[in-house]
Image (cartoon, rainbow over all chains, first blue to last red; front, side):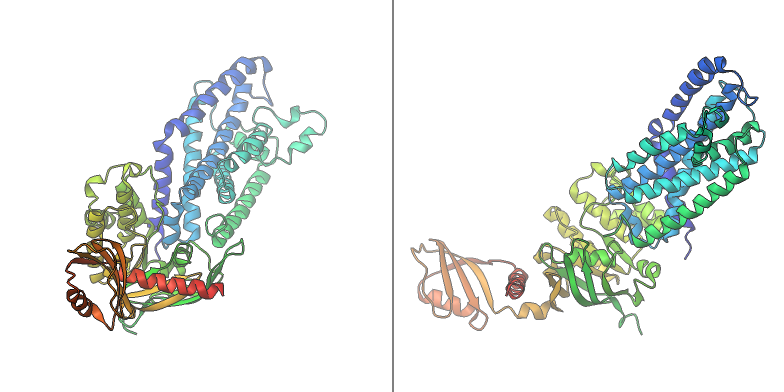
Length: 254
Length: 314
């Protein structure tokens, strides 16, 4: 069976959804990150001085971009797939001859596109504050796509298990946001006291932020091959788990 | 095996027990011939929607098998699904989407190329008298229109088996009759239709074969004509010209006085209406008009479901 039309249908539907509601999906990251750059990067950053050889503004730009990508790829899939469940139009997909991997690829694809679009929006805003250039564009692009993929998958799994709108806000608010802020977006782990640098190594977002920052300014606190290996490993793991959930019909079939 | 001999739907020993322990289906078996217009009836909670849910892949069966045009739903799920179009009981499309996009998206899920999908969408929306609403956001449609959108969506990939779960619920009588004509036409063009409805008049006028499900079991599975022929007593309401203060007594007939101009009469099949009219005429009672007290299928349905309840209660 040829699945390309079904896959394209889901993907186009997902992209149209977030583009149609751009004041909710694309405008907020532009405003929030402009404030980050203005307050942390400019007003406070000017007093902090260079971090690992880069200006504080240049140092935080990659992390702020990736933090937005993480939040938006996650929230795109979790809210879209949960709404599909909530309004029962997931049934349109379940009755049709669409393979589980096509359903998954369509929704994850939507999350990746949203992540990339938000990434471009935030990078464009950053150009108002910083003259940062890409030193290793392939590394930055690869980490952007892999991160968007990973958090789209995480959002999908959250949506599968969610039974209420509360369930889709708990993980972003209480897990994702703290991990992002503590993932080296605004500081280098080498600046942390005592055991905190070691403890920070348990935060996967630290690896992604550092690899992405390396793509921009060539500076990293960790080994970027380890970052790529870890993100790829998580992607494989979450993909297999997502397909297993779809096969069982968890959260979508009775 | 020729297409005519092939079963559109074959269910064997299908069971479903929900996580809370409720046994919705207790091993039902059912065959629907290709080209049939088939009624699946039953009271609320009997197991109709669970059965349709399993056929539509929305509910996981506990055990048993389902095959669609010879393709096992478990082993050849995607192939089997290509034959089915489903219109569910509850509204289940994206209410923020336009009517046209709902149908086009469903066509896309079935792998229909865009150009053909546009043609099929136009055809189905015109068939359901919704073409002028194509660009309207679906949540602004009336309840009846929303149901017709779901029928159009179920038809867009030209399914060989169309399953309609209460398609005319909440639809006014004029639109309902127009929908019957469309469904008859779709059936005449070769599509097998399985219909569940609470309007038994609808089932009686449209369907050739019938199954009645109650408490998760099939309590009747037969031809509509032969089922109706089993009705031994017909109930009529008679309007009479004279004013009566009490019901006349006629051997073999049970007559109830409703008011001075109206009688409720039970007519055994072996005696018939001619005998009743003759007896009333002998008593100088003139019948002005008569009507069935209830739909014939409704009487049988209540008898069968009532019997089943009594058996399960004993």
